[in-house]
Amino acid sequence: MNSNMANTILVGAQWGDEGKGKIIDVLTEEADVVVRTQGGNNAGHTVYDGPKKYVLHLIPSGILRKGRKNVIANGVVVDPIGLVNEIKGLQKLGVNPKGRLFVSETAHVVLPYHRELDAQREVLKGQNKIGTTKRGIGPCYGDKAARVGIRMVDLINLKRFQEKLELRLKENNEVLRALGAKPLSFKRVHADYAKAARFLKPYVTNTVVLLHECMRRGESMLFEGAQGTFLDIDHGTYPFVTSSNTSAGGACTGSGVPPHRMDRVIGVMKAYTTRVGEGPMPTENDEISDLLHGMGREFGATTGRARRCGWFDAVATRHAAMVNGIDDLAITNADGLDTVENIKVCIGYRDGKKRYDHMPSDHEVLNRVKPIYAEFEGWRKPLDNVRRWKDLPAKTRQYLRAISDLTGARLAIASVGPARCQTIFV
Image (tube, rainbow, N blue to C red):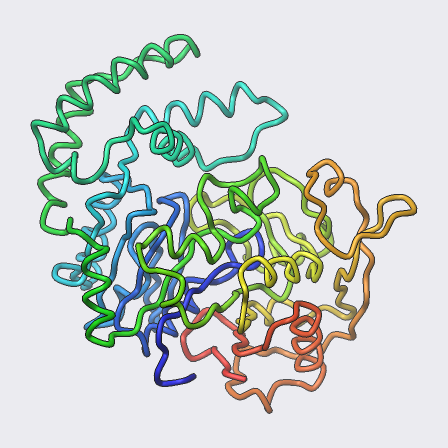
């Protein structure tokens, strides 16, 4: 990779779980600052450092590299209890975030009533449920948009926090009662969150100013996305999406770094397709689902839920490349296809007599389209010990080049396993 990494946005080019955590960890070797710009602890990044396995939810993956600054920026919604537990968990594993982790004072706070509302709304939707993680992310972003949210700067001001919490809890308890749920105890919520506020106060700062100071010093930054393009509130398969902008534009609004300071966009995608939760997924396939689950793969880092699996969808990734302005691709999990004899790739959709070469915006149309497949001969060899592009089987290289060409972006990285060393630069 280019030693002068400059400012890079890394996004998921599918429905999340593309292996961004591993790629971010590898790229952080050449970055000075790693910035998380949206989402909450509904996301999970799994990183392996030798035999150690780390599962991170809010803290950027760069925390595992010594000397790197890690920023939870203004576009993130922060569960303070979850963040405290994550910091303490890292400390137990020998990773000390003090002096290297910075939390935006304007990031919004996820509170217990957000989680309760999330769960109750899913129940009310019945068969039309979205399949959220019930971590309260959507209701928290809803409060942010409604201008009634509580931010980190409010949380660490204990007097102000008490006043705001009393007001918000009173209103939300009424809503919870109307939904048939138990009201929450102010005393308990206040005590728990005041304790978390005292713990987190040293980490809270003006991260916009911090990031611009880093740029003035010429430090390179890596912007870490959560979820994937098709969970974007504007560009995803609405309403089966998350509540933030998971595409490249969200890195700017979620951090306060302007677009003209971004130098490159890397899109991460699996060599096949997965999705968690409800919503359309044209290439979903029982054969590949059974294969991957049987290998112990494709279970969520946050929820443990089995992911829905399917063949690679080039129509979707081509759309993701367009929306994000993807320059380079990192293709992960190629080793998941090691035993497959004939690998399918979706190159278009068919709805009756109509063909789509782009993703329909109407989720009902997307739900009923049938994929048009091209087939590639599998390599039928293990890839986990390969370390150089030229040493990959010819059929593997052919497949990876083909899905890169179909997506419309340059292939830069191929991953053949979860470890740092199982990363091949093309």
